[in-house]
Image (cartoon, rainbow, N blue to C red; front, side):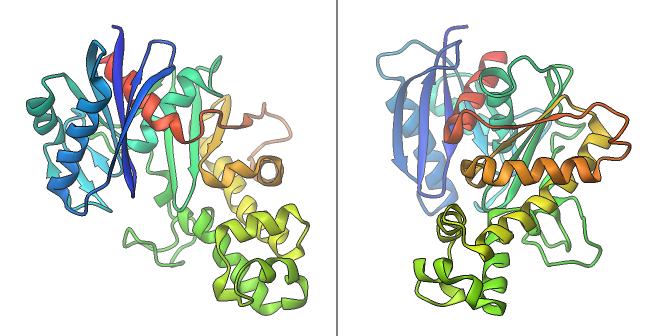
Length: 313
């Protein structure tokens, strides 16, 4: 199969990209993300039509944030869109006249990294996306593992603290609440309130108050050596690394790939994640250690992965 289209549904824009068999994006068409569920379906079809002009397209892959059924056709539940058992595959196929595959967006990003990014050369890979939340995808034996009902690998909602912090999913103590961009900001605000004398750079980048601290401020301050910002990254890394150790006990991959906005900080966050992983890996002194690698495709991973999954059929 030749060219396929991958669709990435973002909070502000929907991007459709024409992708070839080597994972190269040939063309991209973007449209604003509407406010309504039906409007988003319209926008997906518009983006696909715009990207496909002048190309011979074989199929379409859509990455959707939420639970996608085992047939990769229906979005069972989307937390940020009012989709409940939404027959997205059928709706888009009827409009664009092409075969459509729907996949969870974190699974799509994991597949993109496995096929064309940091996962190349590995048969067993777990991809973790550390952004506002925490997502993941599992590839074992060169296959994307989706579970019986299609909703596996929701790693961000593994409960790591009994009766811990309330999560947006409705549960408490989810890993996402301790190892995500949102958690990083919370750590920085708490520490800046408690130790303002150690957060001078961090506070100066915002409005001077702990409540004004944003994620980009924590990253910039950490690069400039601000003690509170650096310590906040270490706390996030401690939780992230211990979670990877638990996943290693379950899946024993050869590599973990760390993507998402937080991973853009490179070794500032990856090095302490590796240390935490080694610290908490059961039997770590005697067993091989999975590599902990930075993702390579950035924000294009989901689009490229969705397009390739559509090619797989």
